[in-house]
Amino acid sequence: MLPPNLPPRRESPSPSANPSSDSDDAIRLTDDDAASSRLSAVQIGYLQDPFASLLYKAPMSQPGGFGPQGGIRARKPPLINVGTHHRTWGIDLLVDRFLQSGGKQVVSLGAGSDTRFWRLMSRATPPDLLKYVEIDFPHLTSPKAQRIARHRKLYQYLDNSSDPSPTAPTMPPPGQHSYKVSKGGTQLSSPLYTLIPLDLRPSPYEPTSSISSILSDHVLPQLDPSLPTLFLAECLFPYMPPEDSKQIIKWFGETFGSCMGVVYEMVGLDDSFGNVMRRNLAVRNLSIPGSIFSTPESQAERFTSPILEGGKFDNAGAKTLWQIREEDVGPEELQRISKLEILDEIEELRLVLDHYVIAWGTKGETMSSISL
Image (tube, rainbow, N blue to C red):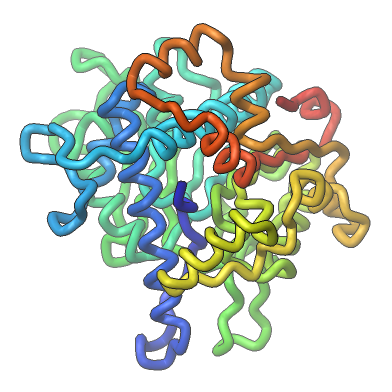
């Protein structure tokens, strides 16, 4: 199961001035892994997601692409499909519990082609969200903004005062929209949802820049610090130096009195199977400086470490995808997905799922009971 999603990155002054552009391109391509895996899981029936095909189009040269009639030309292996299901299941549980505990704002870092906002807002009873912010590379926010603006099935959910039904009187008149596309087509802003092209890494051309200042300057204006806020980082931190990911966690913990963070990570990269994963990533020009958090316990502890000072979270936990399969995916759901494809290699499945973890941290009384 390849590590999906990617860290956001602001454009450098010129492509030739950026010595890490090749590795940045490799990181960007991990969004293709995540999106194509999700599309495969949806097409086969592991997940219900009518928005996956609207927000991601597989390149024609990609062997895992989909045909013009929507049929699967080359599905992902069962191990990847099951892993995608369990990852989605676990994160969805935590997001739902955050919302049920009064959560009002969500920030998705390295969002890529993620569909979670639309899956939430298209429910029969949508959550009482006040703001959903997604951040990523401009090269990824640009096509996403275009697709949102192109498809009514996507842009109809951008205004939290609108009823998405076709005949709703509160829908904007034809040709008028509640959103604005700016920054050369890379940013999309609306009352409920904002897509921001942003690199969280401090720029070498701006000596005073820091992760804290970048978040404060570009993200905080979209949010209300007094409201319970969740940040999501799915396979983002492995590609960042540990100091950078620490600063992100610390900023959220310092800025919001009631806060929750959820991360999805690779672990165990120092054992034999992990070394194979590491070599496969290296072949793709992917380095993982953030892999020092090699156990579920260390992933949880990054939220409660004293080095976070005032940004320290109150509680934290973590589970591998195998634990989520055993403890959180109910027997009826496991039976349902077991009928979709033949999967005989249960030991191999466990080996893979044990190398991925969902960790979370909570801060504030209203968030304290949230866990898996």
